[in-house]
Amino acid sequence: MRTRAVPALAAALTALLLAPAAPAAAHNALQSAAPAQDARLTAAPTSVTLRFLQRLNPEFTTIVLSDAERRKVPTGVPAVDGTAGTVTVDQPLANGTYTVAYRVVSADGHPVQGSYRFTVADPAAPAAAGVAGTSTPATPVSAAGAHDGPPLALVAGGVVVALAAAGAAVLLLRRRRTS
Ligand SMILES: [Cu+2]
Image 1 (tube, rainbow, N blue to C red):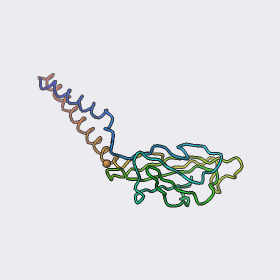
Image 2 (spheres, protein in one colour):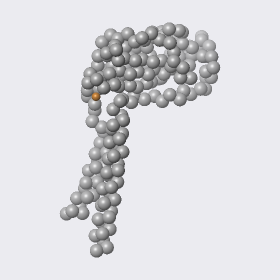
Image 3 (spheres, protein in one colour):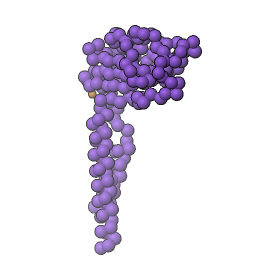
């Protein structure tokens, strides 16, 4: 009975680890964007608008535009209208890949941040100075929330527990066989 319970426990823990994380219903999330993620624009945008699931707090809404070299592109401060935040782009964007990074707060007060890229490829415009056509921006595209930290730690802890349980199961089985 007891030896059977240990593998069952290990299996339960494994299932727990494989199960998708519970959706964070209380958290804000990016719903749509203009320019859209991975968009390839033939005309440079003059603004970036991000639409979220929940209303934005103008005091805690950050939208940062940067070029392929990770240089910050001058924009206005985010103008918040309900669930949408807009920044105007101060200068015409040269051809190249740009990253939009955002940080907003959820209704529960927790921050949510992420980033995505879009490309300006105006056939009539020259490429950005110093930005080769083959340059690949190193900025990773992610939609990581502030809650990614604790769950990761939990997963790591869970793996340790599962490994310990599996080890205990193996030991018990071995002991059984040798006795
Ligand atoms: Cu939260």
